[in-house]
Amino acid sequence: MQQKLRKAIVNLVRQMKARMQIQFNPKVVLLFPCLLFLIVVVIRSKSSGEQPQAYLSKISQLEQHGSQTCNYKIPKSLAQTIIHYSISKNVPQQTFSEISVTAQILEKKSPCNFLVFGLGHDSLMWASLNYGGRTVFLEEDKMWIDTIKKQLPGLESHHVAYNTKVNQADELMESARVQECRMLHEVGTSKCPLSLKTLPKFVHETEWDLIMVDAPTGYFSEAPGRMGAIYTAGMMARMRKKGETHVFVHDVNRIVEDKFSNAFLCEGYMSKQEGRLRHFTIPSHMTNANMPFCP
Image (cartoon, rainbow, N blue to C red):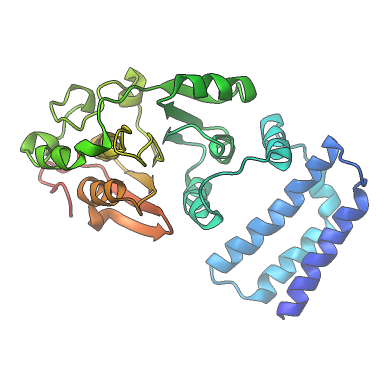
């Protein structure tokens, strides 16, 4: 059965290759959604427990009706994303397995509100995976924002200044044990030393469905560190009126990301860890005043 599956995939790829010219042509990019559609079908089938026969049948249908499927035009922004990554030498810092964790949630939630701490080579990917939604990037480096805006003017990014340093992490952790840091109130008005009060006003006013903490810089002692970003993400999740927020923290192999995510996003809310990425699902605390900070 596995041989039949591989053969079906190879046949589909060959059909696509037969339509392609040897030299690069931007129009060829529009054929890729067919292959991407195939990959999604296989992944979904595996995750739902379907047997190989089930998605072999789907592949057969795709082979028979591929021309009809490819007649649909994909949005211009998505076509630009495919072209960008097909010719770019820069790749996302997260691994495929780590990216897949967030991508699976976006598949269910998008279009949605997605807040990302950090602006990098993966930003266009995140914005595209949340097609039709709002994806906002918060970045510490103004020059980097200007560089990215010239290359990718369609991305929404905002500058954020941080007043902490990695070498203050232990002190901040101790000071955050006070009740003030565990009370439900607007993060922007909190007296907790970990609360980020320099974020744009709309960030606090928006209910975010997903929050990715992959910045600011945190790999040397004088760097800002992600202490405040992790804490603030957790409090914004608790402050939403209802529902839940998916919070992702990257680089949890480092001490700060490890300790602060467990302390303020809570081990009891952790849904999954894949490589250096942790996924937390935090429910609203606004509907139950007696809900403990951590379960």
